[in-house]
Length: 104
Image 1 (cartoon, rainbow, N blue to C red):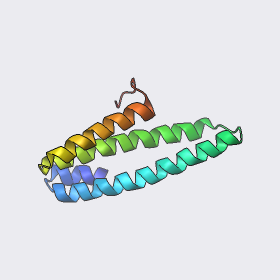
Image 2: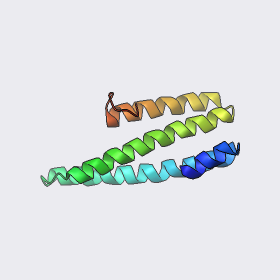
Image 3: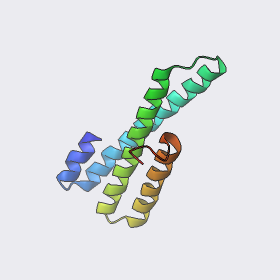
Image 4: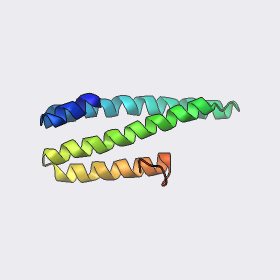
């Protein structure tokens, strides 16, 4: 996501969008893997606070990545996609982090 931010500042929004898309894919994979691990641990009655915190950190990062993707789409004048992506960012952050979380 840092590369996306730098490219955006340089007004290289197509490249920034490519990088944020890669970030979203990687973060989604990590997040889903952690969710699956947590489900397995719950089935075995093993709940780790560190696992839950890691999952929340990934959810926060993914929420920010969705927002950044919306920003880049907006710069590229792809407004309908930008609005859908912003809505996805809000919905994901609200459901995964809670409505009172600072990122929401």
